Length: 214
Image (cartoon, rainbow, N blue to C red):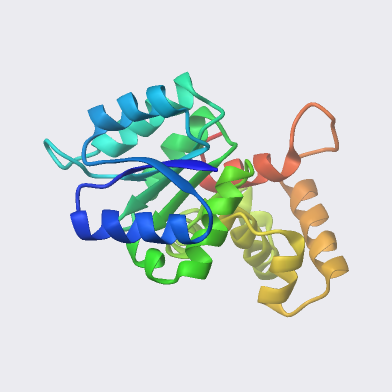
């Protein structure tokens, strides 16, 4: 697995390199600005990029803009955004263009290496990985239909789905059975008017509803 890191903080950049290399990734490039990130992706075609939201020159949303370019030009490349603070609109921006292989985490998650690596792997495999604090804020903000139809337990399940967790991981987190999780998910699909179809992935659409980008 090949990765590119875009982070202007030297200390965090070095830490990310060590973490990724320790679990078998080849870090093809580590850069400090968005322009260099796009050049590195074009040159190395990595499996995943880890991108700081705010980078030089203006420290605004340069990382997000570069990530959106990557999503358009190289959709096979997973994108994991890192942010100092919760800004859920960035997750929505990314998912509005492509619902596969995207993550948004707070930088503090990097300190928990196991959780960070797990989230990165979900992104590489084409899943989603959203920070629990981002999900919690979205739950508070979206207290309206169709999500208003969900029971508290169904909202808990959908929140964990939005983080990118599997049925087994959801069951473990909520201390319920896998079959109970499956029943809750089926109820979520029904209440969000997502009938079975081969054309779309209902799990992804449920998360898109949750984020409000559909």
